[in-house]
Length: 218
Image 1 (cartoon, rainbow, N blue to C red):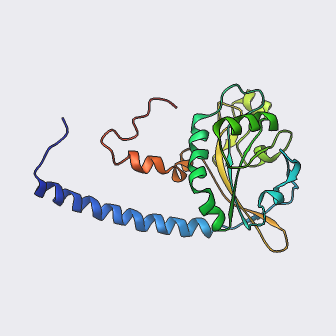
Image 2: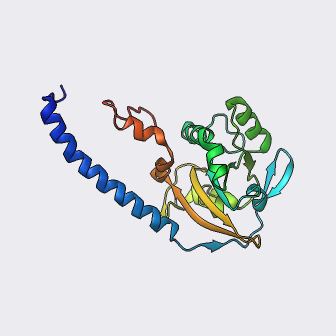
Image 3: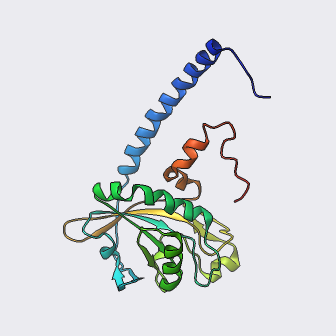
């Protein structure tokens, strides 16, 4: 049984927790400033993707906006099932898509599966987020979400800013890019593994319910 106390004692303990929550909020604000203060890397490669309209460049994905948020989706060629975690992430983006676009942020999902496979997935899920295929491109490898056969065989690849055994060939992540007035594109931020939880608001709700996340899968 969980502890049961009087209303007065509950308020006293809630006030103590509130002090910690406020401190965490201030820490999160400071972390956000540090993230935005990271130096940028100018992209030199001309990354190309498949789209329903044909071949497009990374610059095209901005769609007249200066900021681009990319969800790297775990969907490889001939993969029979989609990643449930990636689906949860895209669902979150769906609900706030117009708001992000009104803040000068274009949102896309990119995966190494072929464009017909991604179109089938997107149509089945009823998503509005644009999907693009990086099949045959270095994009996924360069941004640390896909790994080459020799890396898989060796059990050693660079993931989440360190070397490890990734376990699977394609992993999820998120990346942010900026395009200036001259058309130059810069990589400004990426996160992987549990870093992606920052973009999943469902966890903030579940964490205040008695059963918490109550997850029984990966």
